[in-house]
Length: 246
Ligand SMILES: Cc1cc2nc3c(=O)[nH]c(=O)nc-3n(C[C@H](O)[C@H](O)[C@H](O)COP(=O)(O)O)c2cc1C
Ligand code: SF4
Ligand code: SF4
Image (cartoon, rainbow, N blue to C red; front, side, top):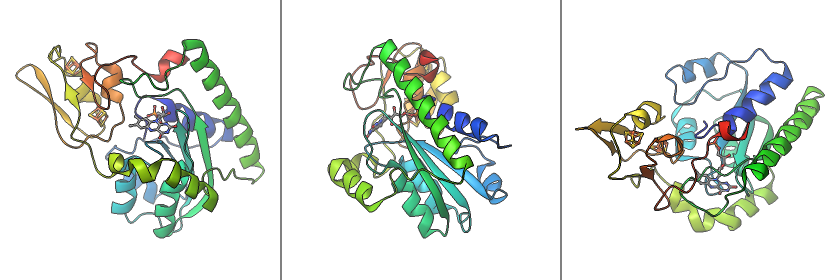
């Protein structure tokens, strides 16, 4: 799963470096469950949200009995900090019988378009992406030798993720959000509705209308031509898309 493209880039790069003949499938696609059933080894990528896996990812893992015997690498991206971003999904997958091969947590530009908190200059963001690429290259070399990175999978990382953020912010990711705001300047172009992985937005009478199944991916917010959508903040300060940093 990837809202603004960071995680997609990282998974794509890792797969390419591993030289695997792999298919990249968005979690929201209809054919994902069947594809997982037919594959032995899976890289599950998602962005960290409040030091947790997005609700959509946790819900997908829990509601599908397709994990027994699968070998899985969890790859997460983050804007700053995630104690056990990978561990959050890894623990659920283990309960479902999966074997966790490794964990990779990668710092990428922040995706929260309506907050100034972690915003960086374009140069800094490009440097962050370049560092991320190097980390993925090192990880790919190690994986080829059978040495899997284990970031975020230890008991220590679990404690850091829990006390560092989840204890205080768990409510933010405990369910889908009904807090998406569509502002007056929406022109009803329908772009947000067509790209939302949760099909959470419809256009009615020339205006976008949000439902209550937002997984907080920020894809619509980062793409609206009117900057008319907000979620955690009150106004869009910067539209964050991976294509800005290439
Ligand atoms: C709702 C939300 C919560 C986030 N929480 C965290 C966080 O707790 N720690 C962190 O380092 N980054 C956090 N981020 C930043 C994203 O994890 C990061 O920008 C990620 O690379 C976005 O990936 P994507 O483009 O694949 O969606 C958060 C982003 C969003 C949208
Ligand atoms: S992308 Fe923006 S302008 Fe277009 S329908 Fe959605 S909210 Fe309205
Ligand atoms: S409504 Fe927007 S932020 Fe929420 S899941 Fe859909 S695209 Fe992502």
